Length: 241
Image 1 (tube, one colour):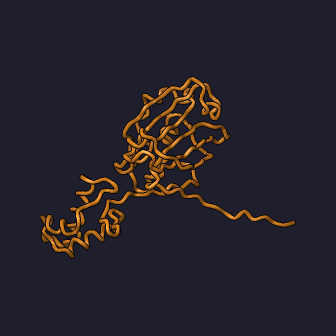
Image 2 (cartoon, helix red, strand yellow):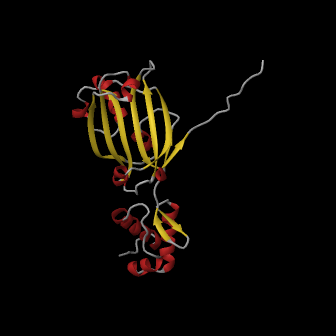
Image 3 (cartoon, helix red, strand yellow):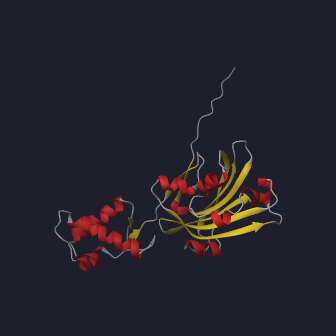
């Protein structure tokens, strides 16, 4: 399986284990013990240990005392201090956000978002998103349907904000965002691959154009162990006169 090519044996083993993890394991799965890996790959225990250590340093695996070695869930950092779609932000961190499924709903009946966007008919875009092929988020984006004609037929890229800017000249300049904890419902849990009641982060954002007109509202549910929310705080000094 391994060849003499100048690459250290533990690095070759690390790459083989990584390939196996990507093809056959999901976050929180336990991998075989070092003794089993030693026998399967026909290498020394020291080589196995070094390969596991390297995968630990890269954030792929995590050792839990007395339990074993597990595939680690990747946690992304979301900088809430600037405008931008989740897809755009994650791309800057070298993460791939893909859409597994998408649905469209036209809402003409009474709905709280109608008042926020000051419109009569809403278009709701519902997406199930994967982060690096792992279930990550459930997203709902609400728009005034009259401002985005034929969106359903033409929306073919991952970033909604990029699409809105390119196709409809809709650009976001500021937003109001709130974050709260939420327990996963049965339906949400099934989609995200977690247990019912699992902690999720719920993000609500109302975005505005350059004239401070509300143009989009979003509801996003994200697995809490894959996400960090970054906010920059400053000391607002008061000068005594």
